[in-house]
Length: 245
Image (cartoon, rainbow, N blue to C red; front, side, top):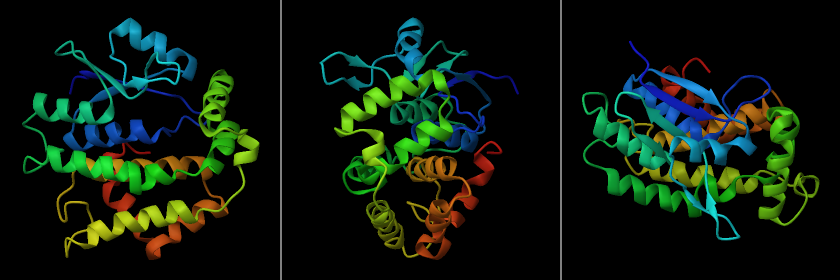
């Protein structure tokens, strides 16, 4: 199978993918069976790289200037360059309709509503600030340290060392919120019941992010116990789409 897709990601010391946002697309490509290669770029290189390849900005910085983020894909078969995980997922379904759908049953609007609500109530709203310091120390390579520290501390209004304390109750509660939505289906372990969808890759991306950051630590063991191991079983159910990581 020829490799048509280039996926832009941020490297780690261990070589393991860690970004929850990029994981959404790693899972999506794996699920659709689309071959891809990864191009790694450090934090300071994201903006100039995106501009060089024609990737659009995905937001706005506090100073009003354009913000560029990963994931970004280049589709070498069409020439398209797409940024933002949700937009990339829509592109993949539109461009590769013969592969398993990320938005089954024409569920783009419903999944967008879930993702937006998840940002306010789910894992995104509760991502633990105490993860930033171990992420800097154990995950990111030195070339990204200063950039990461500057923008994270600017965003949270404190040093990473000050943010490193605290418990995981808020993030645990946010996953309970996700579980409540899944349980409304009555059967099946996924957001849409028995059907895998892009929304599942959003949730799994946060789990993979925490798994890489905390590894075999007591923190990850505690996370693994949430919901009587529900979320480890969730990752196991999606493992075949994770590219061996």
